[in-house]
Length: 320
Image (tube, rainbow, N blue to C red; front, side, top):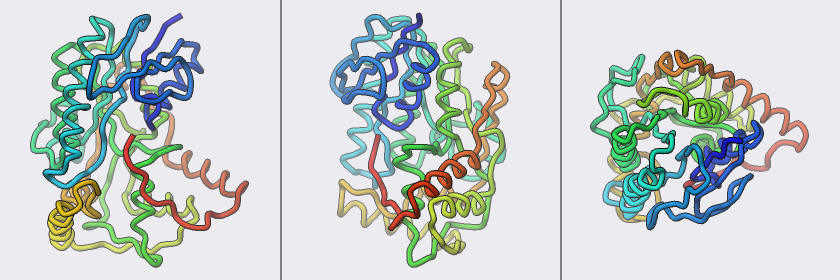
């Protein structure tokens, strides 16, 4: 029986990977600060020491410090300690075991020209600490011969980041989105978990991971709002105004160093420009994404039907 070590199994993505691995018959080790949903917990703080991977045949590295802090925030130091230094410690402890390193499409250069991003798209110019530290961490993983997965905007059951942020920005039935409607790739957490378990057999290198087809931004947001029982009208904030608001938001964020700004340049870039991932390299390895946004919203609608409509929209839930 294969034993899979899943780091960060107490977090959003890692918990899905660990649960799916166990469901498929693997033994699961969960190195991290907290126990995962299944398997044996191995205490590990990525910011301080190497993990104990004894008994593991394969390592899936999901542990990460996440967020979109203001430039210069103390959070950036934490991200460096976990996403870069923690990666170095993990790779040393892996000692030649196959490693699947979960990265992010945030590593790709921002701006235009992302209508169909392949894995050779430039990795530079990241707009926040998360993107910069993930780029540096994945560079270490690639140099060590790992498989690196680059999902975009991961959503699904237990999501503490993407959907809660959208819901928290609805004010009095109105939601302002930067720029005009665009096409965006999204990644169901189930598709990512499936890729994580398939990837140990793939040739080393980077692979984009996303749903079968991109979505129109406004339609996807409306579908999510409706599934959560939130009625809101979407407005388009002109891009220059959105960028200006992001600069102000980041400046104000420096006054509250442990809180994320309400709007950042990274958020504007990710929402206002077409960002579509080409997943043909992963598909060429036999992987096929099977989950779509409509599956997620159907599950939400069914759950709401059982429990009744929510009394209020959920707020933002921090970090992994």
